[in-house]
Image (cartoon, rainbow over all chains, first blue to last red; front, side, top):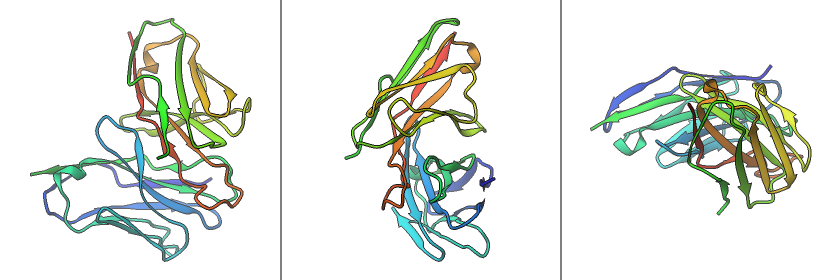
Length: 113
Length: 117
């Protein structure tokens, strides 16, 4: 079945460091891929998405490129801030599925000043 | 703005109580979901609904039931709360796919942190 694998956390970085959070997936067909973010005490919100191979999603300085050849959707940011501390979830959605997203386990990111 | 509203941010209930968690969305979404979130386990789907009065079991339905009498409202019911149901509960909604643009994005409520003592 479909699945999403994320790097385990927590990931701890200093402010202004470069961030990569790895995400790989297994799915038939051509799923849409997502990164959601959960700030402390909040629900999840969509950070960025990509719907086809080689698409790049971007938002708030974060980027991720849909790589079909490596089945990956790694999240990157050039210079992180303390306010980026949150839990990040990678997810996929298959167009022939009416119902649900398939979620990774989440990666907690801690940014130290 | 899309809004998914959960009735409580924090709840404390006693073991054996019947607990209702309510969720309302204002986007006319067909799909609604209940997840629980636990440290190290990510999001686990409890139940989802793709239409009024329709429901499907997710990955961990045991000890839970749901109700969807109106399109905008999806309730999660803990028939007899137990301490292992202490968790963060997240409600989400989305459009039914059918190739509709933007149908793949899910919108989440703020979450309900339930403690069963």
